Image (cartoon, rainbow, N blue to C red; front, side, top):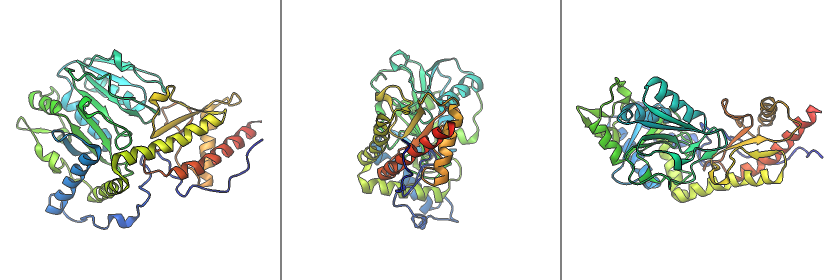
Length: 381
């Protein structure tokens, strides 16, 4: 029997996987202290940028000898800066199991034309890290935003590796444990787990990555916004808040508010717990119904932020059209916004479960998902 239309609604129906929901206590007043109309090189601007860097270090427990920089063009810009600046010194290994990882493969193989081995896995699975040669430079995503699959841990990455590890961690930072001793370059953007504004990326470099920058110059020209060195030396100013190009101080203020909120609720442990609870609510729902399943095949590699789902009912003959209809119906009701699967991913749904989402809103949305599914199934009859 089809369920009746639910009465309760989520207080916040925003489940987009980026930009993601704002912290629950956010209001526009949070931006009132932004130094608008001021130079980002003025004392107040530099102080806020440096504050963003150091508080990021504190919450994520990033080692003191790792450099943290704010760079242009969101996580994409941070990954591109790393690849264009660091790769080419030795053979590379590119790992991909979702669309963003596949994009990094394209850039390295077709644009930079680097000698690289490419290892891939289908959506829902992950590359076997035990078969990766970490004496090469290895580029990978930690959490597959478009596949809902994450690296379980860093145990397969050897401490005595000769190559660098370049990790796109944009859907993992602030929600999952990142083993800093195993990561030489780590990138993310403010718009994911912290619910910040887009266009700014974070670039985190280990001492090994810094040494590569100092000792190696790539054979291709570097655009200005990619240059981390000057006169053969690391541009240390970038890692003190002296950004390569002009940042938005409005976005910086927004990120500082998100850091305030994270500190107030208990830091990284609390952020991870909130994401875990959100994802678990969906996993429990999938276990109760026979028409929806997690795209991630192995529970050990299921993402707790970008939860990707597939419909399994045999009556569905056009999965893409069906998933689109369900998402459209939920959006029309104002109970779930932007939950369709990513355009390159298998047909289904993608529900963001990062820390800024309230578990109560997930729980209020799921009966609506049940209702919408049955409405669309009945329409097929």
